[in-house]
Every structure is written in C-alpha cells, then in structure tokens.
Image 1 (tube, rainbow, N blue to C red):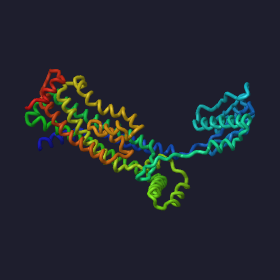
Image 2: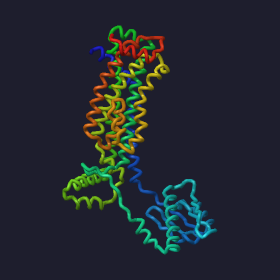
Image 3: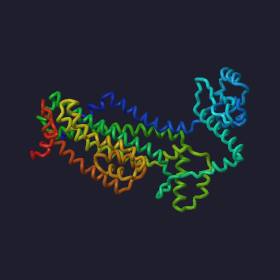
Image 4: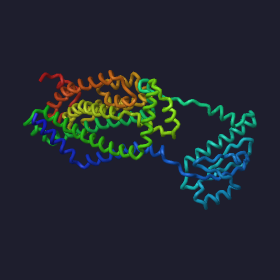
Length: 443
C-alpha cells in the first residue's frame, strides 16, 4: 500500500504543478458563469429606443404603423428627404420604403439603415407590421372582416404548460435539455481527458524505459493503480475547484439578481402547494399577476443542482476508474500514439455513441434507448447525466450505479493482466489475439 501511495503522490503533485492545470481550472468556471448569466442578461436587458421613418408610395400603409415601447414610427414625405434625415440624425435608426404599386397588392418593401445599426429587433417588427397591415386591408376589402374581429379570432390562444405530476413544478423542457447536454458533454470530456492522461503517462514511462526500474521495486499492479488513482485525484481536485469557483460566480449572479430568483422560487413553491390541493389560489394569482419573469430564470430556479452535483461526482469517479484502468492497459501495450489507436478506438466508441444518441434523447429522455444506455456501465456516465435534470426513477439509478461499481473491479482485473505483461514488451506490434491470450492465461 505504501508503494501505491508513493506513486499516487508523484502523479498528483507532478500534474497540479503544471501551468496548464491552473489555466484550465480558472477558465472553466468563467465559461460556466458566462453560460449562466448571458441568457439572464439577454432576457432582462431593456431594448434600445429606435426611430423608423416610413415612406409609403403605395398609400396603403400611411399612418398604419403602430409605435411600440421600443420602436417609434414617423411618416416621412419622400425617400430622398428620409435618406438625408437618416444621414444627419444619429437618433434615427432606419427607413421603411414601400414603392408605388404595379399590381393591386404590394409585393416588395425596402428597409434602409446605416451600417452601424442593423437592428434585428427593428427588422422583425417592421416585417411583422407590414404583413399585419396588408392582411387587414385584404380581409376588410375582400372578406369584410375588421382587424378587431380577426385579432379576436387569432389572439384566442391557450398556453400549454408542462408540469410534473408529483411535484407540481413546471417542466421547462428546453432548459433541462440544455443542462442535460452540457452535463453529458462535460463528463464525456472529463473521462476521456483524464483517461488519456493515464495512457500517455504509461506510454512515456515505457518508452523511456523508466518502467523497468520502477517494476523492479514494486508489482506492476501497484504501479498501474497508483497512476490511475493519482491522476483521478487530480481530476477530482480540478472538479472541486470548478465547483467552488463556479458556485461563487453563480452565487454572486444570483445575489445581484436576487429579486428575480426569489420570485421564481416563490412561484414554483406556490404552484406546488396549489397542485397538491392546498388552498393557495389567491397566492398563486397574486404571483402570476406580478411582472412576468424571464422563463430562463424560472427554469434555473426549478433545477435541483444539489442532486445533479452528487450524481455527477459519483458517475465521474466510477466512470473514470472504469475507463482509466482500460486506458492504462492500452498504454502498456503501445510504444507510441499510432500503435495505441487500434485499441483506443473501441474504448471511446461507447462514450462517443452515447453523445451522438443525445439527439434521440432530446425527443425521449425516458425512452427505451436512453434508459438502456443509462444502465449499461460503459455508457451510463454520459447517458445518466443527460437524463438526471428530467427526473429518473430511483430503481434505474440504483441499478445503473450498482453495475458501474461491479464492472470497475472486473475491468481492473482485465487491465492488470494486460498491464503486467505488456509493460515490458518492446519492439513487437501487439494484436487483439495477443491480448486475448494474456487475459485468458492463469498466471
């Protein structure tokens, strides 16, 4: 055990002293904080006031554009006059020009703007009002339907809410899809990155012939496990720093926007009480009558990040241990990166296949494919982390975790047999047939 600890200490200290370790450690929380705050800023940022000049040679759209809170429409005389105004007045944003009709119904319109203000919001609103005004004119002239009557028909809509039957909380499926994909991708990259470090570390020691000296004083299994655990602790240290730094950044964001997050949490809790039959109708109506909350904030407030963090740590640890031992075996039978490719490809296929299948998971997070991939040990770390934000049945998590724990010593046994023989093999191209013989040997 003492010898394993020495290897663990060496691998751990060597890697955390590298500048690249600390650069990645600091950059990742900044990225997470950015992904967290950017949607909030976009959802809460007020739009700039824009002024649009209207030149209507068709006479259909005159004085028909309605100014909004963010966009003001002004009728202008001629296109040349409007262009001169746009060039002189920096407060003007664009010109909408509708040429004279060659047919009964106008077919073209032009939006002129300065190169420094191609405002997408203005373009969208102009396009919407053009279609609306033209439609209302056709409805009234051809079908004798007023704009008010049509608005009453078209605006009568019902909003569909996805809501959990047990908790009463809204589903926020789009937000859960984004979080699930990010979690699956992070754990895929973490397992692959740190597993590859194990393989490269073994290959370097083998190529430099250092391993011959090391195995003269310890068993190859001790060396392999020390390397696997040491690099795994590096990964856990980095992940712990990511969690702490990201938590500080996200906590600061929530404090800065405390009113929004408190209202989101209150709305979720009252919705849950009302769903369970408690008389909370008055409270629910009061919350719903307040200023609307951006959906991104409500969705983030509904996520159980504590559960996600706990399961992420578990699946990272055992997923890494399962793959890292196998990567160590690959490193032991390879003299260079080229030789290792024939063995690393089959190892990475399950993880890569699961990432590809997340497109299918988006349609059915609890479907047959997603369920089975979240149970099979070689795919469960990625598949289960994608499914967790949607809610997974307890028995599926238990079976998935149990199989992952069971398969780890099995993979360790296989890798140890390969490592023991392969680490001292030089100048010979190892084949799958050779690996089969080493695994099946009784020695």
